[in-house]
Length: 196
Image 1 (cartoon, one colour):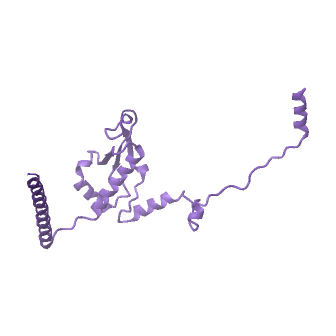
Image 2 (tube, rainbow, N blue to C red):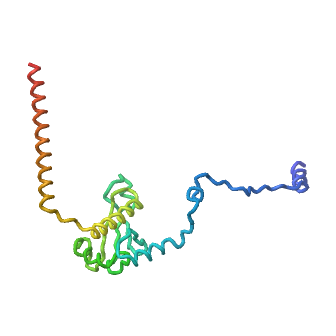
Image 3 (tube, rainbow, N blue to C red):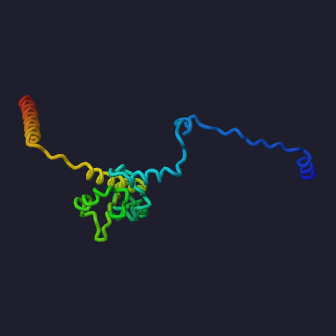
């Protein structure tokens, strides 16, 4: 009897459905933190790619889809995780096809980092610094950026005046270190004499 009554009551009483149409928006939402920004991420990658290809300097943009990325077991940190998860990252790219590297830097890259280039002309770099695959990938990209930026800004030649200044500072630092050693030695010797 009870199920019949409940069914009758359910069918005769109109139901009111409340759909919450007022959405919660945090005070930390992106449009509140950056009110004048456009949040269209679809064309941003193409923008950076075009700028990198047209420029004669390296801006740090590396298109990940042009890299050959492979993962393998690491010998780095991670405990037993190392034996189970492929966290070591090996990144390769063809130097000639890399449009994001300025053309005047490609011969320098081949010359200065010839140990990192395969017979096929691919530049390779690897990382097993952390136990995270993503962090190792980021580390590889940072290494590539660092190498290219070093090529872009060659080392400044040291003048004879600079060499003299460096030698003077090294002599001064060595003399200070020896003075501190002598003072510590005399202090310890004085303590030994006090004990007798």
